[in-house]
Image 1: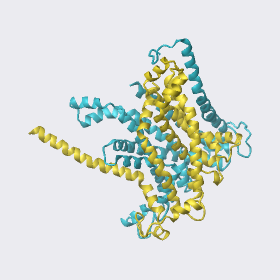
Image 2 (image 1 turned 90 degrees about the vertical axis):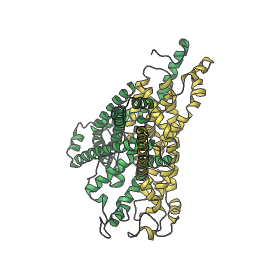
Image 3 (image 1 turned 120 degrees about the vertical axis):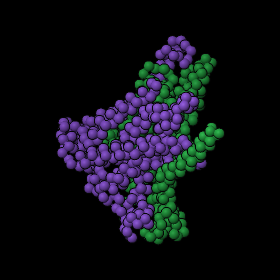
Image 4 (image 1 turned 45 degrees about the vertical axis):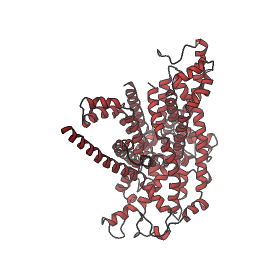
Amino acid sequence: MGHHLFPPRGRRGRDRDRALASLFVVPTVAYVAALILGPMVLAVAFAVSDVTVADPTFDWAGLAGIERALADPVFWQALLNTCVITSLTTSLAVVGGNVVARLMLARVYGRWLVRLCVLLPWVTPVTVSSVAWLWMLDSVYSPLDWAGRQLGLLGVGESVNWLGRPSTAMASVVAVQAWRLTPLTAVIIMAGLVSIPRNIYEAARVDGAGRWLRARFMTVPLTAPIVAVAGLFCAVFTFSDMAVVRVLTNGGPTHSTEVLATLAFRRGIDGGDVAQGAAVALFLLPVLLAATLTILGLVRRMVAR
Amino acid sequence: MIPARRAERARRRQRLGGVAVHAAAYAAALLGAGPFLWSMITAVKLNRDLYDPAHSPLWFNAPPTADHLAYLWRHTAFPTFAWNTLWIGAAVVVATLLLATPAGYALARLRRPWAGRLGMAIFLCYLVPPSVLFLPLSRLVAAAGLQDSDWALVLVYPTLTVPVSVWLMMGFFSAIPAQVEEQALVDGCTRFAAFRRVALPLAVPGVVAVVVLSFVLCASEYLYAIAFVSPTAGKVVSTGIPTELIRGDLFYWQSLQGAVVLVAVPVGVVFNLLLKRFVAGFTAGAVTVA
């Protein structure tokens, strides 16, 4: 390292720094290894075993558990649903996040309150806000249905069973996921927007670049990597989430909103078949790995600039 | 003449833009807070007002009542859930600070060649979700004899908070000018004393941000809490509200919505106070790993 922040302190001082650095990171590294990396390996091991809650001894079962998962039509339904929900949610949250990030930075009266309202969906515990949505979607006293009746879209005394039909149930899950994750993408994109130095805009304006040119050739390329990071974070959190589905529909009606995470929980904890739950959860890993590596590359690129 | 007219037009465009931006910002706020506003109205409605489809769900047709909130507080387990969330959150925050503060300092300041890569690796662990880890961790929890104990959550929740907190602390420490510590070292402080007496006090704003974010992450967690702790007395807000106040013969909708508001608003206010700091911390963290 060529660039020294501190004056040379002699050999003993540097050695002590080195010891202190190790002392400071070892507890964290040990914890992460024991409770994240180790269990990740164990998760793969469970998938090729025959472990159940009743018989927790570990026996090699090869690919039998995975084959069993692949033979299950509910698994394919869950995989498809997970992909559909993730791609729709991510698209909505990236578009929404771009808009909301700019609105959070805009000079408006009561900006503090606007930011608070915008952030609420993300900082409130997921299941708690899902309960608020459940009441809106699940009851005949829903304001959505009431508005529909007032506008004449629904007949007198008529109401929509939002969570009782496959198509509207899926749409409801996507709506709630996008609603709760848009603030997260907005905050990440906001971090990207505020990190663009203002003076380059001034320079471009002086050079005669109009609003459109500045947006097209400055803002878009400068924020593209962080927008991608925001989208990937959103995708990872949607892909692996089970709370929204669990509270709103519990996978129903008849597995039409089942996702991999709820299915893994159903098989592994509710059903007690740990190996089968692990086999289902295993299919989350390749997508997460791909997203992680992409984020890593994007952050490298952003920082390198 | 021409410049004057152009300036006039630009001003008008700006003013119109201002109206549109205001409208859009308030619409976004309403979209975000809408379900909570409605929960707030629902929580204080009388039964005969609420359970009448002809009544507007958006306003009161009978005087508001606090009965349902009183019921929530006195006759449900909600206070227990709130207390469990608070103490588990506090314990996890302490554990997170003990792990992440020194690690963030070492990665930002002690110039080890592996610092950048290790910082990135720890951060990426934030992306390993509970739905992958819950089965192996449930085995670990059982082996530790913590099944159905809240201490199981204290043990595993730092997996959610530590990676992101290390990243933030790294950013906050590297934003402190190096000369301040340099001076302390020249004055004869040991490196540890420079960390404790100089760098740490200057990083307090960052520590506050980490405290709040860690608490929010713990309070939001659902999967581990529902998988590892099943007795009512051990449940937290995020598991107790959807399982204990919904299921059953009667739906205490008003009390339930009261609980939603009581949880959402305080968390939102505190988080909003620190928003700028989170934004600064994430950006500084990314610069540090370079």
